[in-house]
Length: 262
Ligand SMILES: C[S@@+](CC[C@H](N)C(=O)[O-])C[C@H]1O[C@@H](n2cnc3c(N)ncnc32)[C@H](O)[C@@H]1O
Image (cartoon, rainbow, N blue to C red):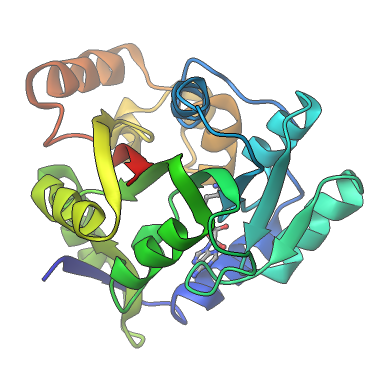
């Protein structure tokens, strides 16, 4: 059974609702050299079947907006209607839908690709049902790119540090963490052939600690980090590079799986 992270908030849906209430829709800018753009590009290059692309769990819309601007046939989907509405207000022409990844409003085998960055690890009952549902809507030979939280040393340390800081309040489900083997098993058993697994350092571990952050990022602000990149001091960069260079699977945030629908 995968390891669960609990936090003192109102549960996954309340967490995302509060997050997307707080921010504007993303612009259509996407850095194709870094997560998630780098992995979206890698996946789209592999497509051999035709049909629309779905970005499942599109959030504030950076990925779906970028590919819509590029002229791709892409649909954005998220279970928080506010997030979807904000993107729609910014760009009325983007096809969007508010739905749950466990019950996708699409016919069988109609999509060429599903991009799902940071989505499946939000599922409290486990990810198998959602993986099967994703397979249902993909054409055979279509591709899935899924980024999920890893069960590794870094995420265990982050959870331990966060638990120490949390003051009371009911602890509710936050994220589900899988080992590399658990991820391989669940995707292989539910209709996918895994083509590649990458380890991704999205937010550098040392960015959690003030002394390692750049002068302009001394106050921890995830939205700023997401927009500008998580900027580190010279010392922070040196420590982070060493951790990543020596122990990447242990000191990264997520695994990105690129898989083909069998
Ligand atoms: C880490 S965010 C990623 C946003 C976007 N993909 C990006 O990379 O900028 C994960 C998104 O998944 C959405 N989400 C979580 N659980 C979901 C579910 N069961 N069905 C659909 N969307 C969900 C959240 O609302 C959130 O927008």
